[in-house]
Image 1 (cartoon, one colour):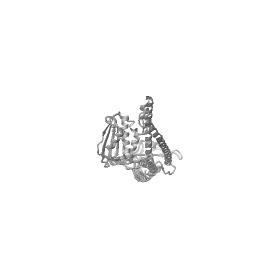
Image 2 (cartoon, helix red, strand yellow; image 1 turned 90 degrees about the vertical axis):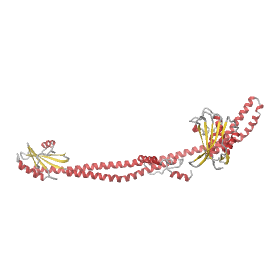
Image 3 (cartoon, rainbow, N blue to C red; image 1 turned 135 degrees about the vertical axis):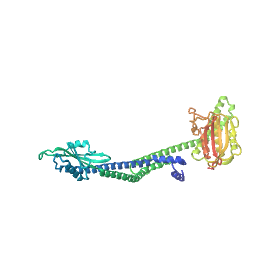
Image 4 (cartoon, rainbow, N blue to C red; image 1 turned 120 degrees about the vertical axis):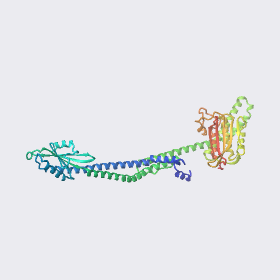
Length: 515
């Protein structure tokens, strides 16, 4: 590949030209972006960042909430207990004076004023207009009777949070004696709306702080994804170059992580592949050179053998039948051997890129007729021609003769007559070019589908049990090389009504002289 074509290949997209055009291409690009490694890395990074932010915010919120509520309830419980212990009670209490005392305690409540309730037997008094409270639960009442130092509870009622504190009034029958309950229990009820407002403010602050944090986290996520994907892109580009045959492609290894190990493995594999391919090419070149040398060495003695066998063949009619049959067999086999040697030398010239074109502007129909005439394929029962006159093309007459002769000879050997040779021209609007189309069709059983891809392979035999064929096994391979030399193509197929059809397409301008 020339440097210019190589640079063009590097700059070209990896997909087929035109494949990404239109809405279909847009959908594929969007789908590829969604499922791409970069997108997955960024999403994973953002998910980790979001999870970290959420966990930190939740733990911080829980600790701050508990601190706020514990500070409030500790202050309220401690102060209310001190207020109750400071009471100078005379039981039974006077309801009017005791209610005034309850209102005084309520006004002195900390951290903010309370509503104070008292229960003594069937008596119910409070610092407010209602003698009882709906937020004082039976659980708190039971806890207060069993706890001389009191108890507290946080409850929710009417959409508001409350702190309820219960402290029983006790007395000691003697100094140092165990305190005993008097049966009077005082309750303090305080709303926690201020604390709830503080907690909601913390939640809003955590939410408002998390979104900018995620936006900021997107930047390192993109940078991290880029650094991770750079070796992957290098590996993809290197694999693409190796696929194009540039086996000397290597990746620059950086660092010592898993991607660096992958790059080293790729370099080692590419080096091994390059070494193996070089050995195979060298072995193939040696084999081709050997075949070429052997063909050259056989050519001279074969020429002498052909001359002798021709003389013997002419005199075979004067020999006894057994000797005549042996002479004709030797003559025929020598002729086949000469054809094989000539074909080997021809294919060797193609392999060595020594084959060239000597073009001339010719009447194609007349050229085909001369080919058929020189092989004695003039019987209409054997070969039928459809050769319109006036078609001129620039061809190498000798190589085009080989193409037509190989295709017709192959059709006569492996198909059934009559073989049709059809000549047409074709104009292609895509590139405004005109082509010469030569079609050779037989009436035989056609070519098996599993054989079709191999009909132009060298020495390919569809029937492996058949060790010898009438031809050299190189005729169609030489045909393919000659057509390629003209810048054309040849293909094999089965006709709609049966039989094999070989189609040769060559530009009407033909190829330029190359030798």
